[in-house]
Length: 102
Image (cartoon, rainbow, N blue to C red):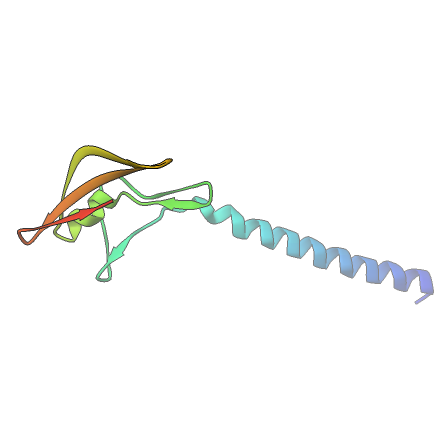
């Protein structure tokens, strides 16, 4: 095998390796459209609104998760402001005990 043929052989191997890497890498990212599930006590929750990915973050419908945990969710609509930051106040009830959160 001449020097030119050896160089073509090496270039062919390098090109095949790069092609294999690029196609495998792109297929790994092509599967991101799969549905997102939430498991609680090893059981997948069936929620009325499904979680979804948006801008690199997973959005989870917490009302459905809280209700599956036995919490009731109530919205008072009260907004508290401290400086430049606004926060919303909510509360929930579990086992006849009210819990509050910001």
